[in-house]
Image (tube, rainbow, N blue to C red; front, side, top):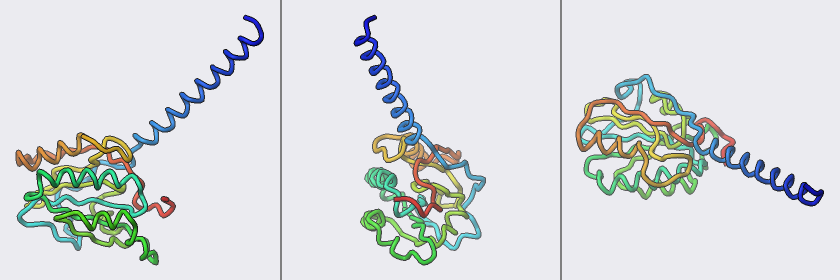
Length: 197
């Protein structure tokens, strides 16, 4: 192989390896989940929040500065199209002490437009901790009797919109009145992360 061909081959190989590394990093970030399967099986007694007595309650932790959570909100909107009469939404808006302007973020304003929803300012993530919610966009579905039916995310990866296993599990739990607890990973920013942009 002559010198110019070797240079082209070497440059092409380096370029391909860099593309492969970039693809790996992007995929790894998109599919990285910080959520854990919860130990709770019922609505926490120590919670100051009230669940719906005649509907299923879907509680979702939200970090107001997590751009990934816009996808979760859009997917919740899709769920409400078919489940609006059976589902009550409760959002825990993480707000650190002294950062009251966080509750005015574009994400929170979008949440305020969702029907059948209640927004709760969760000072320092105290309520999210009672539900063992650690990731923005992480959801838990409770029956009207207070039993946990689902815990996890409703997007297939970070900031991804479209069908996902979590949405199917929520629909199935409500439509078929199942009692089995199902879980999926949740993809989003850690709740107690004040560095999120």
